[in-house]
Image (cartoon, rainbow, N blue to C red; front, side):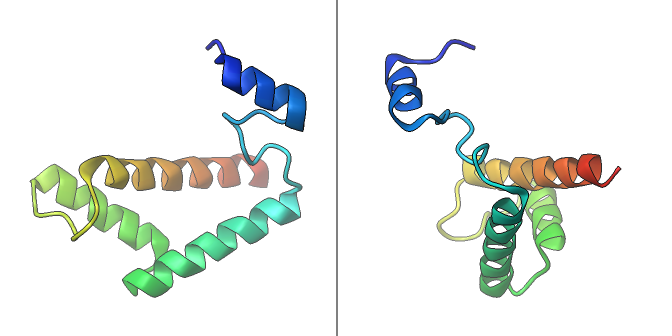
Length: 94
């Protein structure tokens, strides 16, 4: 996939790719960010992150009303992100 002119300039100026904003983080920094995001989501939803992703996924499949203030695209993004993190975690654990 070709980068835009703006992305190329950011890569030149900052030395990192805006399409992969977390690539430059160390494993420890990435773990800390994931833990912080997970903690905030779990505190707000009063659910485990895996359970929350599953409930959202089921709601989409069943055509149920979505939580206030969350769009279908945002829910799909949350589910995809959760699956990506889970996949990356299982890959690194091997």
